[in-house]
Length: 191
Image 1 (cartoon, one colour):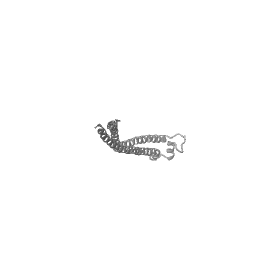
Image 2 (cartoon, one colour; image 1 turned 90 degrees about the vertical axis):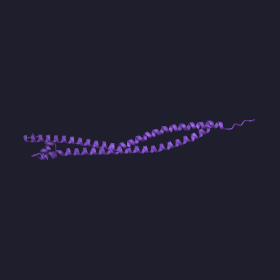
Image 3 (cartoon, helix red, strand yellow; image 1 turned 120 degrees about the horizontal axis):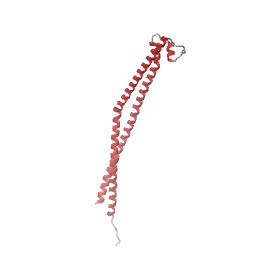
Image 4 (cartoon, one colour; image 1 turned 180 degrees about the horizontal axis):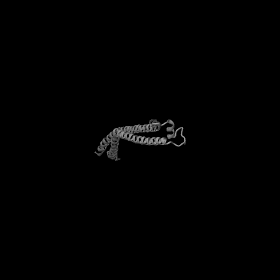
């Protein structure tokens, strides 16, 4: 009787092992796909963020480079030679500045520092906005993928433990069948 119990138990446990292995393969496939999607999305978001930050920094550098000539053209009485002298460009000489030129230089440097400070503050705000934009994009696009990845990992872990139990049941039933098969063999005695 225990031979039949072992045989049927082995059959049922074997079917359960195969079912669990099939489910495990599907879950592993979905998990690999989800992991690739998370990596791809993460790289894409990070690349776009770096690109925007680099662009905004380049624009700020370009604006700062153009600032002296732009500002010099707006200060009344500022000649190109005087502007070049204030900025250390061509035409720089060591002759002392007149009083009027010193006032212009003071106005020029004060205006430059104020505009540069304003530009730096604007740049910092724009960078913060970009960081927040990509943080939100992370939450909206990447978090659902990460949650799916976590769910699949949990399911995979659960299936692994179920598979171990089913395999142990299969092995136990196989041993039971094998042990009781010895009892079914007819014994021939010489008589």
